[in-house]
Image (cartoon, rainbow, N blue to C red):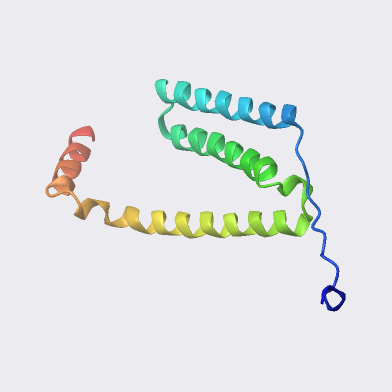
Length: 121
């Protein structure tokens, strides 16, 4: 019966060296510490961009090394980046639209904001 079966297909396996995995893990821990330290300093409107930048760098490390995208076909990495770009676009459009409705969420907020704007002028 074994003569009727085709030979087993071999799947290419990429074994990561232990030092590479430890280096990536160390980088992720350090970036986590940078995130915690960045949260301690008031950076104003740039706080979200700093946090997103650090998180994106950590996500890129995880995708490249732990998901083996660095050693995979470039098309897979391109598809991942394109998917993330579309998710970012959709979230940005949603957040931009929701900003128009923020006054309605907190009762009395619009009146307080208008009064403080009049007092500044």
